[in-house]
Each structure stands twice: as C-alpha cells, then as structure tokens.
Picture 1: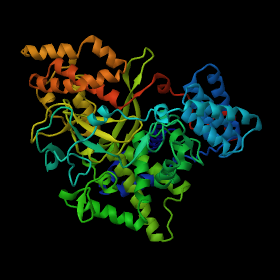
Picture 2 (picture 1 turned 180 degrees about the horizontal axis):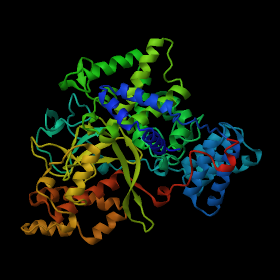
Picture 3 (picture 1 turned 90 degrees about the vertical axis):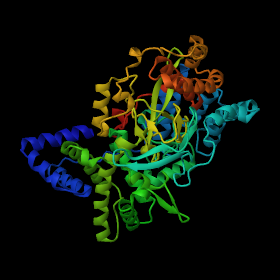
Picture 4 (picture 1 turned 180 degrees about the vertical axis):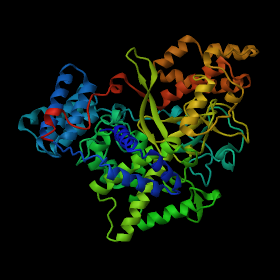
Length: 608
C-alpha cells in the first residue's frame, strides 16, 4: 500500500461515516502542529489505517539471483548494467559471506573490462579480506597483477586531477560574509513585509561571479541512483560498500557509512522496506530524515526541546542563527537554520494540512512501533518527545517542498548528445532557501557531479541594491504567464510579480530578436553561438566550454539592456550548458537504471 492509497482509504472511510466536516472544524481549531498530528494519529488508529511493518533481510538466494543477472549482462559486455546487478547482489549478501566475496569478485571483473584498474584492485583486496571460494584465488591474483602493471600513473588512471581553469571558474573569490558564512560578502540578507527574508547585492555583480558555496544540512538520494551513488555524500565512486543491515543503501567509504548511521540511518534502516514500498516522495522522506538527524545531533531530548524553543523565539535579526565564539552565524550545518524556514501554514487549505498530517502520523507510528527513536527512561520526557516529533514531522513536511532544492546533472542520450536532465537527489540548503523567485532569474544554481556542494552563479548583471532572484521551476521562456502563476500559487502559495510577469514577457519561440542590437554585439553572438559551437557543447566538449565561457559572460552583459530577446536567451542557455559540462556529465550507460524493488523478487520473498 502506498502512502497515497493509505490517505485515499482514510478519506473514503471518513466520507462514508460523514465525518469530514467535523474533522475539518476540529483541525481548524488547533494552533499547534503537534495537536494536528496527534489528532489525526488518533483517527488513523481508530480506523486501523496504519500500515504493517515490512521486513526484508540479507539473503544468499536473492544475492545469487542478482549475481546471475549480472553475469548475463557481463557476458553481453553490458558492463554498467552488470555493475548495478552486482551491487544488488552485494546488498543482499550477508556481510563477509561467500556470496559477498563472489559479488565483489565479479564486480572487480567489470572494472577490469572497463580498464578501471584502481577500482578493480580495491575490490580484489576487499575479497582477500573475506571468505571466498578457492577456485577464485588464481583469477584474483592474476587480476591484481594486471591492475598493478597498468597503474603506471595512479592519478591519471583515477582521473581525479581537477582542471585548474574550471576550478577557478567555479570558485567563490573574495571575502565571505562573516554571518552568512557560505555567501560572498557582496550579498546581504534583508527583510521587509512583502518579500520576507531575502538577499540583495551590496555592490555591482558581473555575470559569471560565484556568489554562494553551500553544503547542505542533509541530502536524500533518489532511489533511481541507489546503485551508482554514495547514499550519504553522493560520490560517484564505484567501490560502493553496502549497509551492514539493510538491503538498500551503498556508501563510498567507511566514513560515510558511519556518518549516515550516526546521523539518521540507525533509525531509518529497519524502515527502509516500508519507506520504499509505500512510495513516500523524496520530499516527505527528507522531512523524516531531518527530524531524525535533529534529535541525533543533540545529547538528549531535553537539549532538542531547548534548541527548538530558542529558535522559535529568536528575534528576526538572528532568525536561524547560532552563536559560535561569541559571533552569530547562519550555517546549513546547524539545525536551527533549517527549522526556521517558512512553512506557509497560514496559506494552506485544511485539506492540504490534513493530507500532510496523515503522512506525519504514519511516520510517527513507524518511529513509535518499529524503532527505539522515541525511547526515554523518563515518562514525561517520552510524552513530550512524541509531541515534539509529531509537530516537527508536520512542520518539515510543509517546509521541505517550498525550501529544499533538487540536485541534478545532465545525461547523455543514445545519440551521444548531452541535453537531458537527470535528477539525482534533493538537499536542505538554508541560505539558498532565502532566495526569492523570478521567472527571469539573475542567478543559476549548480552542483558538481558526485558532490553535495551547491553554488550560486550570476546569470545576469546585478546592480547594487538589486534583489538576487532564483528560479523555482517556472521560467518565462518555457511556460506562459497563466501556467506559471497557477504552478507557483499551488506549490509556493504566492502570486509572482517579477518583471517577466508584470511586463508579460513572451515565451522563447514568441520572442523578437534584439531589434536595435549594435553590430559588434550581433557579430560576437554569431561567432560565439555558431551551430558548430553548439554541436560541440552538446557533445560535452570541455575545451570548447572553457574557451567560450568568459566571452559568453561578457556577451550576456552586453545583451542585458535588450531583454527579453532570443539572443540573450540563447546566450544564457549556452552559459548554463558550459556550467553543466564543468560540473560533470553522466554517460549514457550510467544513466540507465536496472529494475529493482523494495521487496525482493516474488520467488524469494518468503525466504527473505
């Protein structure tokens, strides 16, 4: 049963009992989130609507099943597909078992076929630490020798050396703000009634300037990426290690495995089959993970209660801040910066609040029945902890959809071009969440592939005193005015009054060319944006992107007075394409996900 079908079932029962009006009025009478959730929690309990625990354990039979599938694809030289099946085999194999070592051995064979000698060597060394079949010994020794012979220059083989020109382009230069520690000192956070907290420029900013470099409070990896990414830091390292207990998550290192366990996975681990099978959205799951991490980074429940109380009672000037060495600091690594983000509860319909309360109540039931998360020797603390978690779950289920950010990359299509977006994860970035929306933004967010770091780069020239505007997904070049307004109102609860909406800027294909562009600008545009250049960028040509980037930034500056026009739109899109190349592209073979589910294949479910 999915969380959506759970909600629909509850609504159907309440409708049949003619209780919708009564419950709506009761919900309207509450002023606190914990009251709302605990009330709905009671309703779901009375309807026997809570889902039962789903358990899935390590299984040699399931591990063998996926290993054999991997062997089939390896035999057809479909190496990256084989790699994912061997990772599934590794996930289901009891740690240290023969199944575990054979899955590693087979994965090392894939690495050898791909000429990834360092990765192959690491897996071979890992096999030697385990119990493994004697008939593999000679193969592994020979494989190791082949790797060592080919690893003439380890740095070259690893490909970890970063291009210095790209590093410079993507680095924030100059001083950072002493309070908003991830942001350039050229930015300032201000407040007014109309815009709330928002960010403005303290001095003129040029196109291409890096304005923010922010690590998140936490991230959540999309299930489509589970078999190719570290579940904690998003690294694309191929020597992934499985969780010791569950059959779902992989990590690039022991450090990431330990950090995830300490921060949230110890609680989440036994719930993984339910969370996946019930198809909670990434945003709902991110809310749950935030609540778990918030408690785990505090010594006890009482300390968390104190943090939340202080955060909610802080004055506007220091909202979301913590004191570090007698200085107020706003930093995503501190929970208060996430807790104080807007939930828009005053703008939400009662049906929306009820639906989100159902999700929160189901999460609360999971934590209460199937984990020790709410345990405390002090009965009063345990009662208060349940109230705190109930309220916090609903709070973050409401804050996440309007504040959290997607982490994307560009993937290669079957014809070799890099034009399509691939979603990888979502993260909690407190500073980026302070940015307001425009349908004609003046900045663009980027993430380096395999990293959680989010950077903000100027896409248009920004004058001193101007607001920094991000884009929430509704862009004037791609969506008409009515569609944008409807979408933004539905998810973010505001009416957009940006220049593109006020002046009714046209869609891309309805735009005019710059009617009065200077000849030198027209000439530069034709030179920089020729069909040959565009074709090279679509092929992911990094040298073309490096050569083009600075002149494109200068062209964007020259074209700004003529906005909106096709020339500027083309220039901005090409700039973004260059940035996508700089941050890393996903090859076609690694963009294809193999099929797997929360439960093992049917024939193994009883055994598992």
